[in-house]
Amino acid sequence: MSYDPDNVFARILRGELPCKKVYEDEFALAFHDIRPARPVHVLVIPKGAYVTLDEFTSRAPAAAVAGLFAAVGKVAHALGLSEPGYRIIINNGRDGHQEVPHLHVHVLGGASVGPMVKRLDP
Image (cartoon, rainbow, N blue to C red):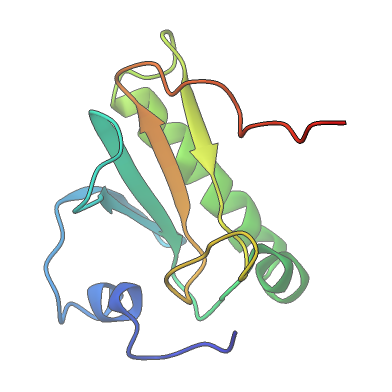
């Protein structure tokens, strides 16, 4: 999957599309998902043209990698998710069901997120 500069998250970063912003710093932007899967469903995206986690961790400066994950923690704390708990999900590539070709971290909480994905039968 190659980077599409007209993907929805790139357009949000450029200010071409609105978002319900939760957090922003030099490394990341966090905003509410328009199709929430839980009462709290926020997306945290890096400010750069990265499609997958593999690409991001191999190409981005260390400060940007640390900044993205620090932003995830700040968002969870600001939304009151730290104590009850939350789940972060990064869908990576086709088999990971990544829908938008821009790296993004889902922060899900506000209710039980359920068990992990169904285990394969032995």
